[in-house]
Amino acid sequence: MHAQTDTPVIRYLIQENIPFRLFRHPRPIHSLEQAAAERGQNPDQVVRSIVFRTGANQFIMVLIPGPRQVSWPALRQYLGQSRLTMASEEEVLAVTRYKTGAVSPFGLPAPMRVLVDDSIMKQSEISIGSGERGLTVIMKTEDLLRALGQYELGQFVGEKTPG
Image 1 (cartoon, rainbow, N blue to C red):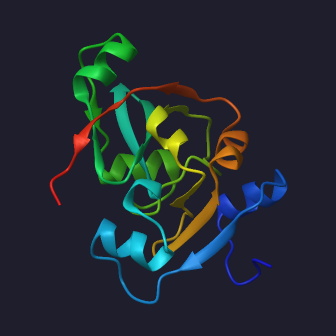
Image 2: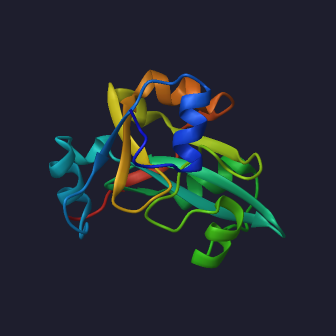
């Protein structure tokens, strides 16, 4: 079924018996809207996995709907700390083994705290990084949560970005 592609994400989902399907984009992705349209989804169904550095060699991942931005005040308050930064591309690769644009909370080399914005719950189906650029995993939201196992649900986003 998934023989043509093998990533840690896909191996994890198969191992955990989580239903999903793969979608390979026919051309490079240049916008969130393009990605969503090609997948037959609306932009809020595209889940972005954003990694933040919370301290020396300490990282968290926040899952948010594609067109939204993380609310820094909400995230700082939730975490109870004033200092945090988005992880650099090099840090993201080091802690996830995925390049930006393909990051996923699945198949990570070490456990990472995962925060899920509650607005994702409004969607019955989402798409999320597969570990490979140009390839996405599409799954039911309930299967996303089941696959995550441990996660924290909260309000971590502000307004939609201007389109």
